[in-house]
Length: 266
Length: 310
View 1 (tube, rainbow over the protein chains, first blue to last red):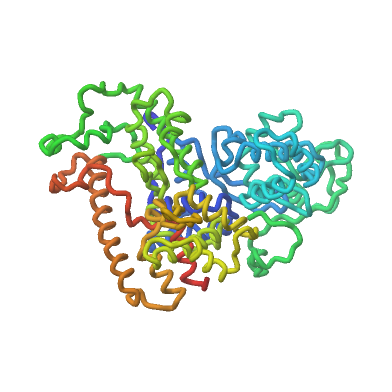
View 2 (view 1 turned 180 degrees about the horizontal axis):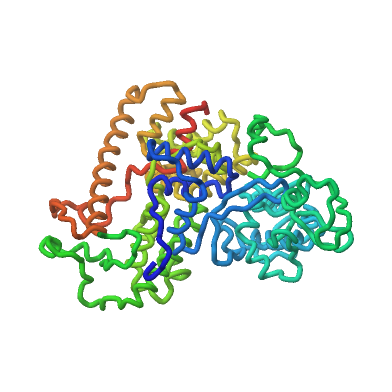
């Protein structure tokens, strides 16, 4: 700030309330974030025009800069929904993830993380994770207890569970991408399109390059004959649809009533 | 013009509030008392850096709701700058208020324990519930039982009430886990409740009291209103409790005013604040922890209870 050339934004009570509520929820989808922003204006400054979300967040981030944290925007890997979370700019190691986890619980997360990164699909089965329970650091943990701990991770939005298998929540990816890339440089997979960390995605059968599902959707949008961008071979997988927030709102689908069997990132 | 975002202000540590009235008036800065060399510009940057680290540390540690020990702060963050602890913690406190609207409160002077409390009225239910909502709802019920019972309640009484909610000791609940552990261990560690043995009881009996955090995060008035809502009564129907709740509100308001004035003096030393009655015990010194600070956690549940039935 002394001698900094960037003009620091000004935080008002609108911004503070927003920040506090975002922190409380951990991670939010864009639609909720917009609702939250409107709510904060309503509470503190009814007559002001609601700032564009991007500028609003940049404003907050410029004030948070000195703390090396920021509100980061990401995209869910399975269906391309934009999400927002407060993350550390300095590398977040697992120990900083949250302090409500004991040493053996954090080690369980670490083991699950490694299985997820090494897997072909980006998912680690509950059985495989639980089989590692004997190798955990700290207090001895029984499998039954480990099951509860895994559920705690799901509740705290670090993991997602789908049909008995676990993968990383978008929040975990946002927060820990840098740490993961630094710690597991050989095992880590990267998207051919956006070059970010890839946990779930599609891969080319011929040359092996990978792409996020939302990246596939965007890249092959309205292309009836998709070909691998790297080796030009026919792309064998189903092309997902690009996420359209308008369509979702029009269909009147509320979060809780969506019948999709897919687990949702909330 | 004071730029509040610029941390390069000369600030005295909290001790100097004991300076007498003469030194206060007409002076732009509060100087650090003799015996402590003023920090060099380079040191100020380091102090600020530690304060920033402390802010993040506190935000993460507060997630568990277990009060943070000063010794942990010193060991994990402050380290070799421990003699500057008061300044560092004041800067961290300021940043927490200005950025996150949370107050850093020392709830226990003997053991130097700190908690974070939200300053603002809660935005309950704006985005539905979080994972903490059910537990806080349960806590609210227990706090109201304790208060309506004369500020303490026997364990047996509490279980009678919980049984009506379908909760039993030793039976694992999908939302709460093992309920007995939650209310006698977790809530106690988080300072929401106190769980004490009834003196001279054989076989040993235990009773519950409000914990320090509960006094900070909610108020007797709020809890009274909650109980009334559940029982569909008017707060004035319970005359003794109502009187007590009102008295607490008055006290808390006085404390809030004193605190605000003390802070204004520290952060805006150029303002001429009309000197308070210096013999007042609350002036300048760390005020009594009881404070009418509505908190996100408990009042969030309370407010969502406004809309729905329990």
